[in-house]
Length: 70
Image 1 (cartoon, helix red, strand yellow):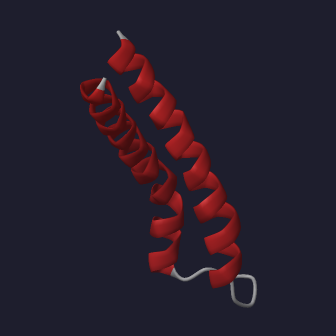
Image 2 (image 1 turned 60 degrees about the horizontal axis):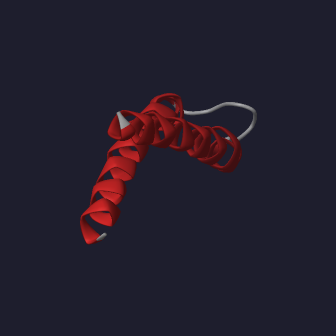
């Protein structure tokens, strides 16, 4: 049950970081003349979801490593 909770926490943390990184920072950097080119729309659109999955996996791995030490 603890692993599920850590995975959900990592999922939400990764999603929050993804939205800030891709929607705010990267989107403002690649906008030129008010438009975004086609490859960047996919990166900005799917970036938060990818970071959410990475965050969940990283949270579980970090929790397992810390739990095995103690």
